Each structure stands twice: as C-alpha cells, then as structure tokens.
Image (cartoon, rainbow, N blue to C red; front, side, top):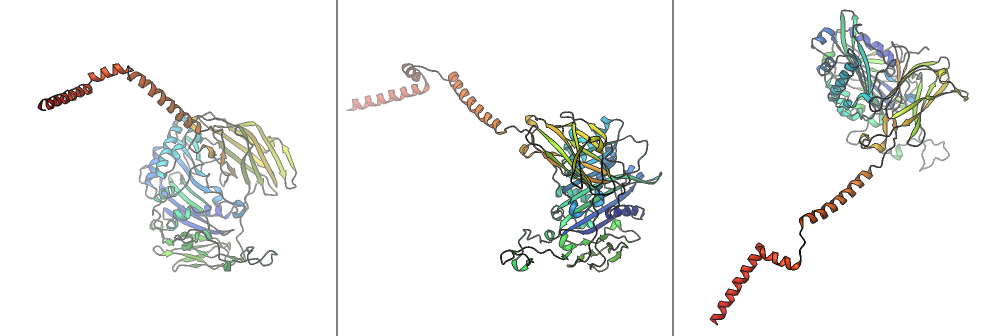
Length: 591
C-alpha cells in the first residue's frame, strides 16, 4: 500500500535534519487553520546531549531530573504521552505527526529497559513509573502488573541501540487520568528556558486545557551519526486544537454570550425567516485572529540557548500565499515553494506577534484524508455479559489497508476469542460474513490472570479497498471483591483505547480509538451502612442491658432503707436529726 506523506510528517523529517546545526537546542511552532473555526498549533522542542557527557552526568541541555531517573532505571528509550479530547478526523484530516506524537486518552507510557530477565525488567519498570509519577505530578505509580503489557509488533525502536543491550519493551496506560496544569508545569521545567522565552512562552494552562484536543509528548532516544558519535536526544511536543472564537474571549469575561440580534447574519431565502427566526448563514470569509488574542500573550523573543550562528525559522504558518499576514517589526518571512506555508525568523530579544485579518477565503489548504478510520464500542445489555465491536473503514478505492491492531483489556473483562467474527460491507451496501482468517492474518493473544495481568491482543489485519470491516467478539464480566470497587463504581470502569499501526517501521502511522466505559455488576453499597447502623443499635441495647444486670443490685424497700442508713449519707442524715432534737430540747427547758 502506497501512503502519501502528509505535511505533518514532512515537518517531522525536515525538522530532524536540524540536529546537525551548531546549536544543541531547537524549537519550532507550526500554525495551521482548520475547518469549523479551529486552529492547530504544534510546538516542538528538541535537545541533544552527547552520549559520553550523558554517561558522565554532564547533561548540558538535557534535564537533569529526567536523566537521573533514566540512568537509575536503565531505560534506553522512553516515550510518554498526556492526551485529552478527541481528534475529529472527518473535519480536521490526518493527525499531526501522523499520530506518532499522540497517545491514548489520559496517560500512556512505553519504554525499552535494559535488564537480564523479565523479572528484573519489571522491577526497573515499577521504579521508572513511580519516579515519573513524582516528576510529572501524575498517577503513574498506579501502573502495576495489571496495567502493564509487553507488545510484540505494535511499537518499534526509533533510536540507535547497541546490539549488546538486552532490551525489554513494557507498555502501560491510565485512561482515566485527568491531564491538567499540574502536568504542564513539570513539562515546561524540562525545557532549557523553562517556558520564559521562545515559543514556549505562549503555553498557558488556561488556554491549553480549554482546547478541543491537546496532546503532550516526551521522547528520549539515542541517535548515532557514526558508531563513535552518539547523542541522547529528548524531544518534547505539544499539539493543541483551539477554537478561535472561544479562545479570543477575554479572561475577565470568560462566559460565552449570544450574539446580539443586529449582528446576526441570516439566510433570508428561507421560507421560515422572520423577525424572530434566523437561520445562520455560513461565512465566506475566514475569521481574523492574532497570537495575542489566541494565547493571551505574544512570543517572548527566542530562547538564548537555541540561538546559533545561522538564524532558524522558528514559527511557520500554513495558509495560502495570497492570504495577507501582518508580523512584528524585525521578523523575516520566508515563503515555501509549495504555496501553502511560510516561516518566520524572529529577533532574539524582541517580542513577536502574528496577525491574520479577516478576509475572503478564495482557496483553502488541502487536508490529507486518513488512510483508515476506526471505531470501537461496547455492545450488549445486562451486567453479566457483553460484546466488543470494532469497525475499520478503508476509504481507498485502490489498495488494501494493512495494519497491526493492539488492545489491552483489564483482567475483569474476559473475552471469548472463539466468538471472533468478521463482516465485510462494500460501497454497494451489501453486507456479508466472512471467516475471521480472511481479515486477520496473524494473532498474538496473551490471556489474563485474575488480579495479576490483563488481556493482551494483537492482530495483523488487512481491510480490502473501499470496504468496511466489522469485528465482534463476546466477553464476560467478572465480579470484584468489595474492597476493589472505586468510590465512583456506578460510573463504570475505564478500558484503554486500542492502538492501530499502519505502514513500515521507518514511517509508521498511528491511530488510537476512544476510551470506553465498562459497567460491571455493582453491589448495593448502601446495605453495609444499614447493617452497620442496625448492628450498632443492637449491640448498644444488648450491652446496656447486660451491663445493668452485672453492675446493679436488686433489693427490697426495707433492705434499701437499712442499707441507706448504713451509708455515709445515712449517717450524716442521722447526725443532722440528732442535732435538731438537741436544739429543740434546750429550747423547751428555757421556756
């Protein structure tokens, strides 16, 4: 299958050539307007440190906090992802970087660890996840054996490694992790300029996590131009899709308000158009925006550590050449020969702002169509059993789509692989059931062990041209112990998204499905409280009665009077009566 390289992959290949520049640190921002009033902003930061300096703990541009963790855990290659939202492939086209820099919803981590055996590799993996959890203020310490898998064909090494290393690949996900500013702050601290200068100065948590989709990635790998010339490279990427109109709202007035009636653009050709009924008319002009309006600030010059002898193109804009763009004084514009991109070289110590006024859209940037569309849902009813349905759509009319499908399931979701069925639907709408072996060429299946590991399933699939393939299989839901239910058990349990890998290892394309919510049989958590209250009441009544029987003494009234006279109170009362009688006797004698 021949796959055309998208512009995002072109940027990846072109930007990789910058490693030979005189500077060891490079940064770049690519802006591309998208349909539906959206803007894609791709931030890329890359640092190189020589292998000898790294081994001697002279990290230079490499962050020391991360370097010490990697050396302690013997991690040779690391890939970390923080992702929220959903990429709308139907409206926005193919994914940035062909999905290489994208991760599952929440947190996704995979790494190659040098170890003598699997047990040692897993022990170092746990040390790695716990250390990264503290470094990035995330819950990666919850990636235990039940959330750890060992993929076979879904991931490949991207760096240059020695053949003597005994590398073990481990992969873990946290689909329920909420990505927020607590993760962005440690991410920026890994940069040489800490987000105070350069394009990183645009990154603000209020804007980043208000986006429709965002992904932060960290990749560490060794790169060798020659056997004796190796560097350790760290690449950090932030990709966000911002709603232009939403982002332009001032921070002191963040609540969206309806457009006034006199500013509405209505389609008067509609029959139902009236003074109180308006059908919105699509705009023929692209809305204007600027960096200051979108991000709330301008670019604070260039990071001093990234300045080299030859100025670099720091910011690139993907718009047709006929579009008018205003930039700050001192910046140099260079237009690319493709007719749809221009780049800017910034002044080291001057702020930079880019303004795109509202103007008629005569031409638009052609968006690359995804080579494959995938959808995964849970079907069935009831809380005991269910099914999984995966739909693959190949939009190509000429070639088949060959890919690796990888999914990891929690141990309490028990799939029945023998129920796996395949159905093909052509463009003519005719649906026919075919043997699963016609679609699935190879299968790797590692069954789950209760409370020890989850299910790992990797399939080498092929979808014919202009066809839609549906895979289904049944599964059974396990009943957890009372202490294994989370506080929000009725919400459901997160199932990690599936990973789809297309193409060769040199230029792979990754697609990830959405995460799923699995409802499990849930006991009535109000009953334990009712039992506790009833039991406490019964114990209180029983204890009080038994305590009274053991402590109290039951006697007659006469015996109680005698006992009362023998007590201290009785003796005192007798003395008082005797004293009173004496006083009365003296009074009678005087009379």
